[in-house]
Image (cartoon, rainbow, N blue to C red; front, side, top):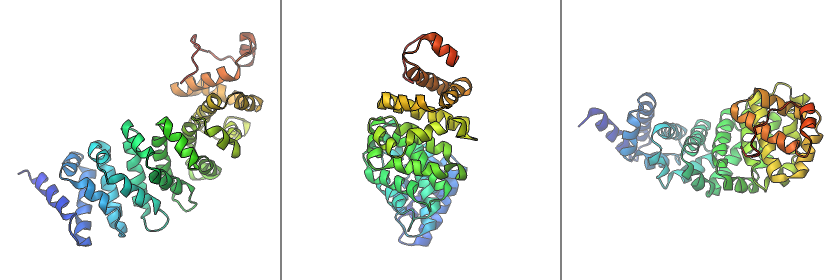
Length: 320
């Protein structure tokens, strides 16, 4: 038998040991192998490691949590199917994430959230499964809402939430669980801790459902997004501005004339939207054009050109 395969089989078998020391030693080796040698990842999964790694997330030992969570993250990078098909993994991740401020290691929390993100952005079917598990959504929300969460934990929880929100029906669930207020609370300190792009990316996705309008209104969400495009935007990055445009476009689509009026009335906001239309990524440009079409609807072509020299496509579709 191949030496590598034999070694992995022995290590995975050791995860069944009642001895914490034995399991920890095995986890260290599995983490190292899965990190340094990507070819071992499918071998580790095929040996039955995933449910045993999931079980290790319940351990009170921080080192065991950390090595198990990091190994799962490594496996999720190139061998996702065994993780997606493991019936116990999601509950284990939820358990660890929900105890982020008490018994869970910060490093394990980060790896667990990153594992979710890794699965969600690549496996569309998993978004439906995660969206139906409100315990996971509440756990991610808890990480984002906690003032004690390290920046790395916040970034990974935001990225996982972004993956969840890629499935449109999940946005409604997330809004009902209170994600809008949590996100806008984060905005207040996001620049200082370097997560503003991640926060606004999730906000832009969450804005794409009918339930968002009222919740955004409660937190003055439209005004906050417009501030990222107006003269007070300061040193907002282009990506942040693109996210603000995307969020406003979604709100306009679902919120109608009330939102349109608020955006039109904001001094300098249209300048910011045009800036994205001229300098943004291909996707950012298309969303800026779509938003401007909504805002300038009903004005003559001459009026539009006098105000903003936007180059619209010949088509009339505003989706993007």
